[in-house]
Image (cartoon, rainbow over all chains, first blue to last red; front, side, top):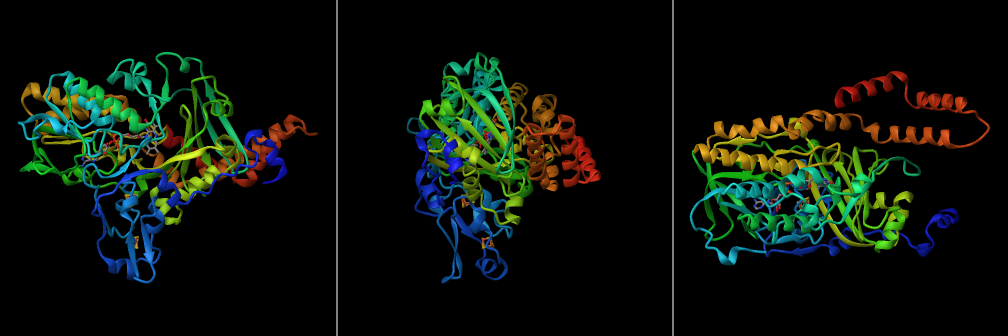
Length: 114
Length: 440
Ligand SMILES: Cc1cc2nc3c(=O)[nH]c(=O)nc-3n(C[C@H](O)[C@H](O)[C@H](O)COP(=O)(O)OP(=O)(O)OC[C@H]3O[C@@H](n4cnc5c(N)ncnc54)[C@H](O)[C@@H]3O)c2cc1C
Ligand code: SF4
Ligand code: SF4
């Protein structure tokens, strides 16, 4: 941080820097009650493997639930951290290749603030 | 919160079943219970609000129509006395502010709220009026007889419930409205993905930094260089001792440009002007939600035989002002009134329920949605509104405010030259014309 900028900050926190939060850090703040079973699935693994070059879901999901696993050559799904937004069913996967439903009643994300 | 323990859920028939305990559903429930109807709200979360998120401001006037003088009892954060609009280039910000002492006294204008607390409270109001609130229960399907909705299937073992009418208040992902053939699904060009963090900041520090009298609140909307040039907005709202900060972007543009919504929020938080407000604050919660911004054109069919759709499920959001909770409250109330009327006639056919659409057409809900019906497509096709115009505004204001040897007249000249150099006159005229047609 430049000296000039530092000077303009209130004196109480001059050396504070905004923590760059990773998605994992962020999800650690939010409360979840995960079900034993996933409410998310890939419809056709071939499409991920053969057709979809950019693996859109890995960046459109705000909770980074989807990850491309190089070794298995498939998408893995960390459904426990799903924020239930619906992005992956409404264009977040342009190939419409994700089956998303809501978790069973009482499971999933539980916002304390919201 | 759960009423489940006390009731045999299959005990008879309901006049109306409402899917979803958000503002739309709870407002419908209040109206129906007030009118003496047997009504149940089914909510998948552990409590109404546990799945819900918004910026979020609740506006007094529509809310008071559902529960008068709610500010005396509802869990509110701060009444908003100042609103600001920021046009930012990343380095600089041009600001427009509005402040009113009126906003700080009854009946107030708006309040910052947390949905997890506000919706829970509103559910309590509905229950006090006689509505049954069934939580921890997912409605998985609609029960049909021919083309008529006659009840719901829930995820509970004994979970089929019959009703004369089902009101779908399921929010932005209209699974059931799609199943009922009312909605064709929502397209990524009319959805915004919003991510939000709640950051804790000691009350005194917060009031100091936002320049607020005790208890007053501020709400900032930010457009410009926060979303990497794609259409989107940022917001910062003050709560009691936390700040809600978030970013929303049109889903289609985000997909196309390989942007990550959470990264955009980090980028927004790191802007110098934003940093000044939030530094030292510690994060408490991360949330994400979609906003239906298709407006009037993106709306599904609003009713069928034995079924009505209200709130976000019907796309009732004013994208320009990010107002949705108020439209949800109003549409829920009108859906409730329609059902009371249908009950009096003894008919729940689509033709009777059409009263709902007629009432909506006459109300501010449809009027507002119509006014702004072209805004989302307009902004998507004019992405430079989010980059070039904030830059020009900022450069222009900077020029006017820098004191040097130039006269003000010369400065005005310079500003005009600057605008012209960045933007050929014809293009500028074209944009202004498009904007005028869109907003008028
Ligand atoms: C970031 C952001 C900022 C916003 N800011 C504002 C603002 O400042 N002011 C404003 O007025 N509006 C704002 N909005 C819009 C506002 O939040 C919505 O328009 C409003 O919440 C819609 O209310 P609703 O009742 O229709 O839906 P929701 O509030 O989404 O409620 C739907 C409910 O249905 C439940 N549900 C869904 N499906 C089922 C099922 N199958 N079975 C059982 N339960 C189910 C859900 O759990 C949820 O409780 C904002 C939205 C976002 C995302
Ligand atoms: S975006 Fe869709 S098709 Fe592509 S990898 Fe993800 S799930 Fe597969
Ligand atoms: S619903 Fe939202 S948070 Fe959950 S997996 Fe899909 S995109 Fe990710």
